Image (tube, rainbow, N blue to C red; front, side, top):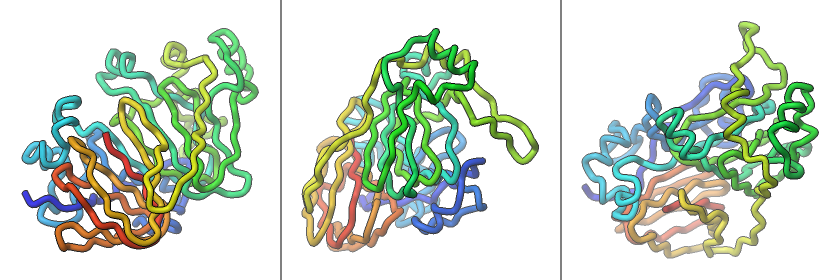
Amino acid sequence: MKAYPIQFEAILKERIWGGTKLKDYLNKPIISEITGESWEISTVPGDISVVANGDLKGRNLNEIIADFPKEILGERVLENFGQQFPLLFKFIDAREDLSIQLHPNDELAKKRHNSFGKTEMWYVMQAEEQSRLVVGFKKASNQKEYVQHLENNSLLELLEEIPVKAGDVFFLETGTIHAIGSGVLIAEIQQTSDVTYRLYDWGRVDAEGKSRELHTELALEAINYELTPSKITYTANENQATELVHCPYFNTDALPVDGTVKWKSHEGSFTVFMCAEGKVTFTVEGVTYTYQKGDTVLIPAEISSIVIEGKATLLEIFL
């Protein structure tokens, strides 16, 4: 295999709370007026990403990893995760509030669902003036207090609501109660998992008048009742990588490009770039590729260097 930057067909998801920003802002070929998610890179069963470009076009991510494990994932990733691609990348458009929810940790997810947990982060790409996120408790709580407020439909009284703007970053450890508020467009980076416990859904019903399932009992053991600050404060400098998140599951840097950046790989790991703003070119061994806001690209571990040129804000994710 001659390594090259790999893009994938977007896996688009209708959601009761979705809208049209994935098309309006990110140029995704949305499937309806309630398209809530674009899964950019996924190996979640039933939603395996398919290569959209180059010699591997038409093959899915699991297949190409099976054929070229070291070249794509890198030695360090193989040692830690085997041939399982460990991350899931999404763009999310919340026209309406998402449900208040949480994700279990690795131990609980493995025991109950034979799955990874879902540690995740959000990068706010666009937000309306009054938009906010729900992230964790205002102060440390406990199961008794939580259940009382849940039963009284007053759960929001316990939870932290944070106004947001483009460029804001949040890191959500497993067990953190959270919700994306209406009017927010985000990039989401997370462990490969689709396990979510829905706690409260605003009394919402679907087109058939049915409420979505809640997971009240499952959530009780999974909730982190402690105070868990989630907003990341950072200062990004042009043409330099700035650390946003460093955790056992992934690392994410902000890379604002204005001009030329000579990028070097992270030894033993693949890298994923998500373009949050602007337009850039990547030149790899004399071949130039162009990316713009809303594009996501997998850089196989075998690629050691790239010349990046243009003006853009990139999220750089690696293990």
